[in-house]
Image 1 (cartoon, rainbow, N blue to C red):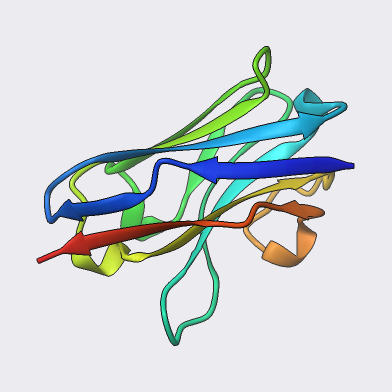
Image 2: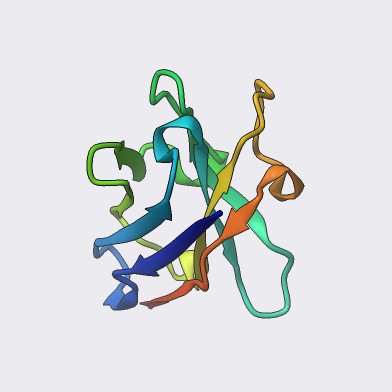
Length: 125
């Protein structure tokens, strides 16, 4: 069992930055691959980034490449998403999630076992 709690969301102007955090509690954090997803009003949930359990290698959705950076701190069971050069289209509720899947690609939200409650990110134009 794992509990995930996101924080760090807020209202920022376009071009600004935010750092999201996800605090994980439960055993075996380092054995989980972790993901960030987002859902905008009226839209389906979409993949943002993931970070592999074995080597910490990140994968990003194309629209956030070069702007967002995912990282993890296994010692403190934390996951982060640094978001720079934010755009109004980044406005959404952001969720962190954990998966035991060993698939090479883990962009599919259905692979994830645990989810946080989400944190709102609003980017004003």
